[in-house]
Image (cartoon, rainbow, N blue to C red):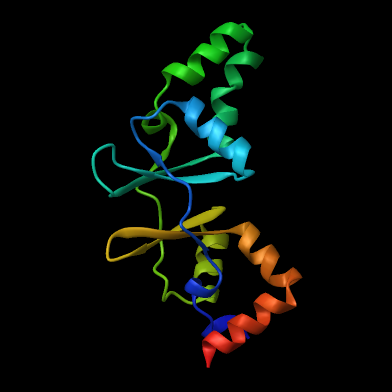
Length: 150
């Protein structure tokens, strides 16, 4: 059923993103304020996609607390550690014209929770597991996908 639908119909447009030279505090704040778990990372001085940082990456940085580093030191790490040092570099991505089925298969095969969406090398969206949940819960979105496929 979904093999004719394109990522452009399902993706989140104008996603939040980070620069590789920003500190983890920015990532933590953006994720918390926007209730998101994935952020594309662009190069510090260009719009080239260089990575993805996830909530899981932030949890790893929080491992310091579990290892007995005090809260002040852990908080200081959020202000000192750069996104580029914890992100997943060279992430897999799709285009707006990729089929939803192909994108889903890629996410399942590689066990990833998001795919940045690039058009002509420019970040135009992000496709996440949440987009698929919304699809299954929203008759309106399913109807829009059918209209887009025609």
